[in-house]
Image 1: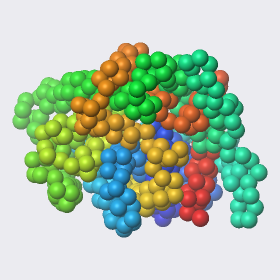
Image 2: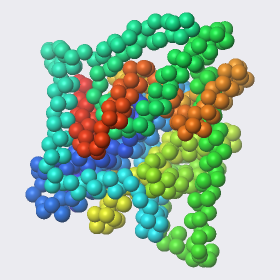
Image 3: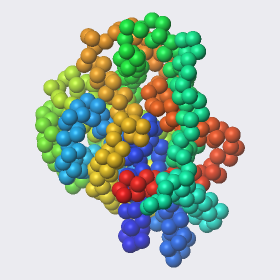
Image 4: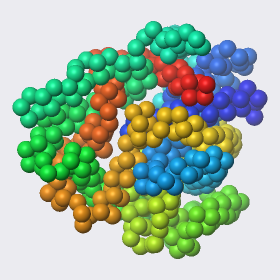
Length: 539
């Protein structure tokens, strides 16, 4: 392992953990950060490396694969672990008042779930990449990005985006005794009413990171977020005004959104078992005798890794008072879900962790006597291990294309996980301490969605079933139209200024013919604004 590559891998691991911790709590999407890391690594190696270009390409691939692990761990932690704050704010705040304990909890959970994900990836690497020849598109995208190492134009574009955004942030926030001269937001429309329609104040946040995220995700977010905002103005508020005035607006919107979340969970639970059974049954039934299947499966299991993982898993779950039966349940279903998500990621490049986390969490809620901490830990564990399994296999696909041995890239991916586990608790503590969960900066929509689902199940007897059913039907219609109800919830629930910033970036991308040519620039913007936010949260 070369010293420069190790240092870059550590830097990228910290950077991706910091950036995606914020993104995971701020907005309801978790874009893969690996392409951005690859561009940053290219820039660093251009400045500091004296290696031949072929060797440099491999070193960039290793550093990028190590760094991306922290990004997916942080994303899953932001999506699921923060649910505990909304379920039990007193308990969560008591943990925050003991930073060392808070950091320990996140470290041990990240390490255990992350090692589980790597273990699953190790078992199925050859089957999915070599035998089944799945594409793993993010791995191919990173390889193509790294292959442009000699293209100075893209490096310069990245540097321009980075420097311009850095100057912009300094001019906006000021530095030292100098005050900023660029406003943080512009009010486009003040609130007003037209008959039963209430138009909210529309404020555009001057926030480069939002524009960058919107640009990269493009049409994935523009339509559902726009539907969410328009539905709130044209449908949901008028319904409240005309029919449900006896309820406060907050009570009405929470119940309506609970119906949407319940709809998503219901149909997810309905479809998930079938997809899990199809994929898992092929693992043990396709063209082999039972003895051959068992031998083929066992030869990919490293006994030392497996024993270490089991001991760590049992120790972690026992510490948080999981019964032995619930531990067995979580181990088996986390394994199945991680495998299924790896297949999906291999085909389309996405890792739909949410529905699988819900699939494991909800039955456990009714089967076992578990508390809020354990509910959140189940969802977080499944989210992290599934996401890590997909991310690790993206890296293994990259290694396969770049002619890097699995053992070499495995060492770097473990390094990335360990670095992320060591720093993630401190990063979350800093961000939550400075910005506050549930605020505009850390709205934590995914966590609030999960809280809504659990809140609905707990308070079902006291909810208005008409409002709940309206939300359920609305969510069902969106699903049939192939519009993500959870992203529509972003438009309904998130502050309009955050939604508008993402939509502005996404709309801008729709008018660009060769969008990929602009990725280096926006990656520079994304990286610069992320680093500035970290600096601002510390000083």
